[in-house]
Image (cartoon, rainbow, N blue to C red; front, top):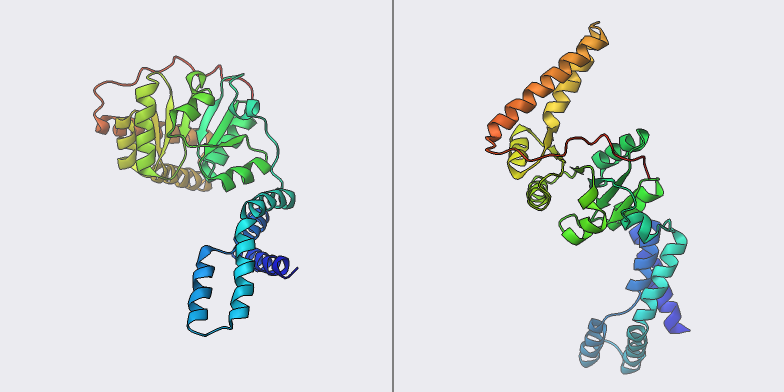
Length: 283
């Protein structure tokens, strides 16, 4: 009873601290129970404290027994923690066929952050099938609860992309805010899938140039888009008709895009599919 009480108290304190620091309920519960298990270091500390006569031998023996039992039940604590975490904050059950199947070609959205979520929302609004991919398991669980079609995985692994059906994907869009990773992924994807449309988020025009050299079909610099949106809002506020404003913004965007591509000095442009209009309805 004493052992159970000690483990329960340690689990409770750990879970409360994690929850206070902003961890999810399921994560806090699972980690609290798992961390309730003592470590081998406890035995070393008890032995040293006994030798130094800092604690009584009987007390040390008691805590050594508690530690030994705690170490023995660690695997059980791990199982209990996972079970309780799922009960506290259940994750929607999504079949492997739905997540990894290739029943219909889908746009692959790499990254489930704010940009990836917005892209997914727009695809869904226009009835286009997609699957989002992210290496952050907690983020994937959260966006799945919010209704997004997402799966945990590393886009740098070709086997993961193949299971997602990249060979038949109408397009891949890189939304992560990691310039080096985006460049590497664009390079790998272009080498493996020469005719695959690759759209990528870029921090600025310099990064966009790098992405074009790596094989991106379209690279969108955030700084440039912010400027265009500000210009659009200003012109509309000044009374300019919406139609001409939108037309001029599109014209300026195309002009900048051509300049960036020229700066990339591409000797050979990627061989792209003739159309992506046949993207099937959303899943």
